[in-house]
Image (tube, rainbow over all chains, first blue to last red; front, top):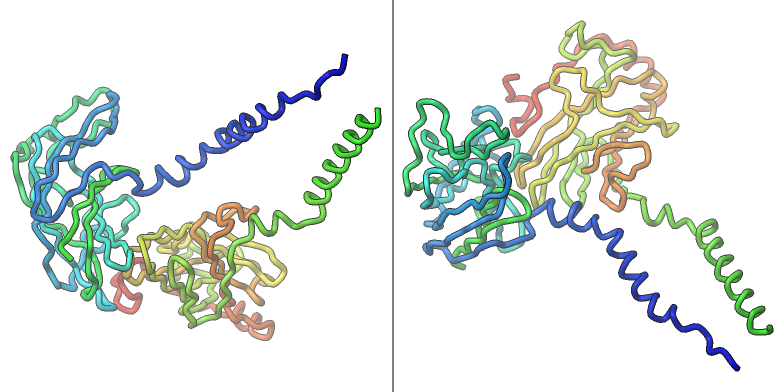
Length: 208
Length: 199
């Protein structure tokens, strides 16, 4: 009896290729996806309320951060800006402190400190404030009232979610902020991004 | 039988080809080398993510005249100006390469000496980087500026833009620079020009 040549490798080759890609594929989430803004969780136009619910986690486990936000517009042409540790300096090279007027609605127990705001212009350039790598500009209260910023994400399991430092009043249900981003005076901005944690972000489009 | 011999010859030929590719073709050079942009003092080097300019080079035994910051050899202080062009950029690697390819990392000992720079798009950033070096490192020293942290295998900035800036120190200048005792005042790094900085 003649034996037929083995053909099992024809089925095995694609399986091996997929297994090889999967084995080295951990680099894609670690070095790319999770290290930048790559997941749009909500979007809307300026002047429009956008409801956001964002999956995140703290010392107690998973939680969902909920808030609504409206981009009221941009303003400000001052060249005074905040360097690290509250010092002021004067922006040069045609840069100005562009104010971003935002209205928020959220329950007072939602942790909304430490948000990063990014203005993107029509050439794709990104101007940001509030990220942990940003050395200038306000770092903590870009999205919340300065005096009543509300709770932080818990870091230790002994902390209770939503607790405020002694003597601090709860955040109102609705408030407005106007943080400043260093940006060129003549840039035409197309969108603002709000991000608490990479890769998630919210896009608010500006009128062209 | 003939078929088995042919298969065997094919396998051996394939393994031989693999060996030739590994040994003879410089795949490591192609896969790992950064894109080097050379420059000199006073000229802006345009990288993919930032413009980098060396604005001054100083050699001194102490930074700010502070005996606690005395160098083992001499401080080579390099004043830089950086400007992120497209997006906020963290520059994590400053290192020095001398004429014989020996390397030094930026020192953490000098007050206000920078080891990294977090750049905001469009905002000029001023930083001075300090290297504690022996006399023989001065001639032909070059500053490397990269986004990746320095390591001896260059793996942190593989396939990335890298500025390679000649600090312009000639052999004839080494004696004079080494003998100089003037302390150098290093200003705090950040968006404030050193001439206007208060600290």
